[in-house]
Image (cartoon, rainbow, N blue to C red; front, side):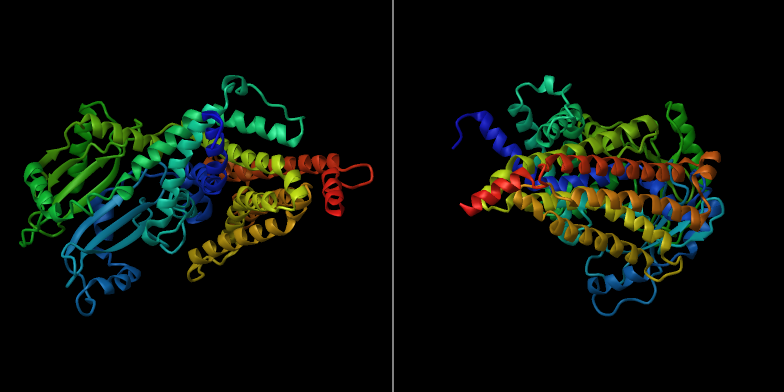
Length: 561
């Protein structure tokens, strides 16, 4: 089929990169935003604009909140199909209480799992959740969408297509093909090290786009490979669901064997029990971590078999002092506070897995490294975008002569994906500032604004890329860049008007989560203005003295002939 192996790799690189590049653009862009998802949350929910807090006292703050919690109404409604007969009106048996936080979270998420009466699956659970101010235990609105951690972050790995995990499968396939594209790209570029230092911005669009594509691809090659691979490792259980298929009949036996080995009760005793001071258990866990030379911040706390004689408490370390995502869990008997078990050192295989997971999820405390993650992700965006541009520039004149519209449609999808997702994200932030705080279903409205804005950007991209069919430059790119510039400035101004937190105030107070988001938005607007002006000059240079594009004239002559 091909004359040599290198041409085969070039074909793989071109077509796999083109078809799946639209998915990978979303993955890279929202992956970059997810590095600072908690900061975006604070921008979007002004009530959470205070400093991150450690895990508060369980005995004084958390326990009263847990005792007041109930299953969420939406979860109860969803559970109706999972029970025999009518759904229960009360859920007296509590399976778990849990609290989770990170070193970047000002608010605390609490979760309670309740046994589902008459469930088809005896281990089924219906959940309740609550968001609180950890300083006082006061409840915060749960219906406000955390745009960073609940929308942008899952969009990065699942495209927010949750039916049958469809989005996760699409992203996984794209990541696998990305590894193929990376390898084939290295093979087809024989002078890869020279291309590391080659960028000619004043050359014609096709040449400068290819230079920038090669440059960003080579510079961030280790980053791209590592994150594509580690992402596949993290979701290995989804792509290879052995536990839920071949091993499902052994699930109950395995859990009982694990309980016997660890000494942690698998079942409730059926006898009421009391809960000793969890704060004392936390103090003991921190003492043990300190003795091993590890930081003692609590990231995750779980009480299992609540109210039962077999209740036990598991306390996990936040682990912000290292890359590997290791909890170093210590487990206590609920009624006495005695230590039941301390998690042993991990095996070599488990250590590799936790390192790759921690490397990808970056829960560690290292701000410079976090910014390097952002630069790596954005370099992937640039690499993909310039690949689209090179594809179109290389083929549009040939397609115009042949009367083929392939280049035009690729350009339409490219502009809608590259600039369209930025427009959608900024429009969502603007909607967040304009929608009434007490609006019912506010989070659903914000998501609808995002998808609606992206759909409009897509329609505009299709409409304004028509000139590409005549081998001319599409005005859609410049117009959407101007839209990004205007929307970015509007988002920052609306944050000021609706909250009073303007840049001088947030920078002066050293409150960088909100100031950083505002500055990043303004930087995006500035880059968009520069890009729009550059595109305008390029369009002017393509015009002949008579005002007719040379490529279009050639296509017209061909059509007349």
